[in-house]
Each structure stands twice: as C-alpha cells, then as structure tokens.
Length: 142
Image 1 (tube, rainbow, N blue to C red):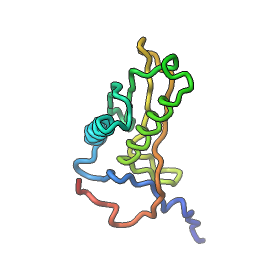
Image 2 (image 1 turned 180 degrees about the horizontal axis):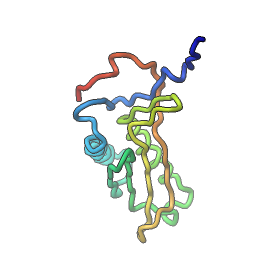
Image 3 (image 1 turned 90 degrees about the vertical axis):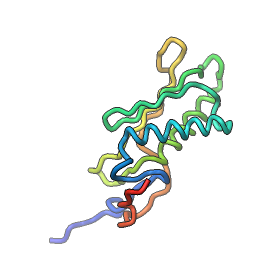
Image 4 (image 1 turned 90 degrees about the horizontal axis):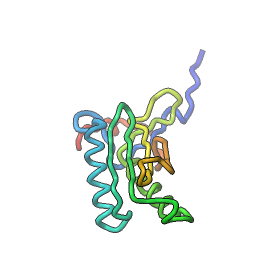
C-alpha cells in the first residue's frame, strides 16, 4: 500500500521574519511586530493611530484605535490599515498548508471605536509566497 502525499503537505507560508527555536516565541514575535508597526507608522505607511499587540495562546491580537466609519465612510483607510497590518504580521508567521499542522499563530486584527466596541476585523493566519519545506528552514537564528 502506498501513501498518497499531497503537494500541499510539503508547502508552507514562511514569513520573511519568521523563525523557530529560542527567540521566536509568540511573545518575542509580538515585541518585534510592535517595533515593525512603529517603523511603518513613522514612515507614513499607516496613520498614527494606537496599535496594541497582545500575544495570547497561539493568537496574536492587534487592536487599532482611532479609526471610525464616521471619519472614513468609504472605509478606504480602514481597509488599507487592516491589510498593511495583516501583511506585516504575516512576515512573522509560519503556516503549513497541510490540514493538520496549526500555524505559529492566528492573527486577530480588531478595529475598535472610541467606546471600545469592535467595528471591523480581519482574522486569519497569513498571506505570502508559498515555499517548499526545506531543511534550511529549521533555522534558529534571529
């Protein structure tokens, strides 16, 4: 009997800043992502709204305050900020494309209004180029 192996079982999304081993815990990712968000903000990539990065068990939550549907009725800034943050967080994630391996983390980007209520969200694992799994990806440098 031969075992069927799907090509999906051998593919991953490997973020450019992702790694495994010491220094690549979810908490460490949260610290690096917060620094990346600050740099993106300083370079004008996203507006100067408050972003909080909270690592939880296999979930990286990014809370964005300061945007609203009233101030952005066509939701252009809301979509741009959400997409930019999702892509930036994806740089730190490792997502196997098989059906059994969980991602390093799931990201939850929550946009909250002045009253603390969530009015928009993006939840998922990652986006990026798909690569074959190779031994060099078992890197532990940071």
